[in-house]
Length: 87
Image (cartoon, rainbow, N blue to C red; front, side, top):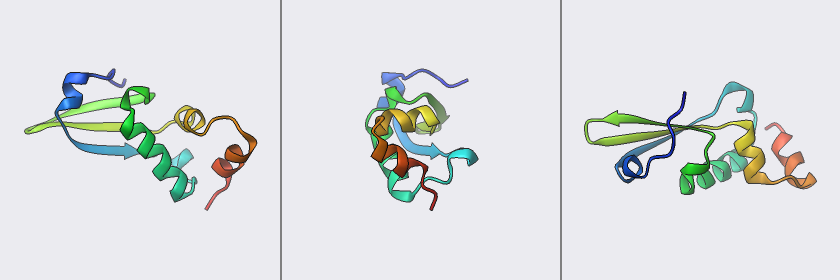
C-alpha cells in the first residue's frame, strides 16, 4: 500500500524514482517523460506514491498507473491514440 502525500517528507526528498509496470512499458519515451514530469511537479496527484527512508532523507517512488496516464493526457482522441501507439 502506498503512502499518502506528505509535505514534511516531500521537503526531505533527495532521490526520485518512477516505476513503470510491464503492462505500461510499451508507451513511447516522449509520453513517459511527459507523465514523469507532471507527476514530479505534482506528486500529490500520483495514484501510487511511497516514501523510502534513506540515511540522508527520503526517496520518492511513484509507480505509474493507467489512471495517471489518462488523467495527464486528458480524454481527447488524438492523445488517446498517441498513448496506445507502441514504440
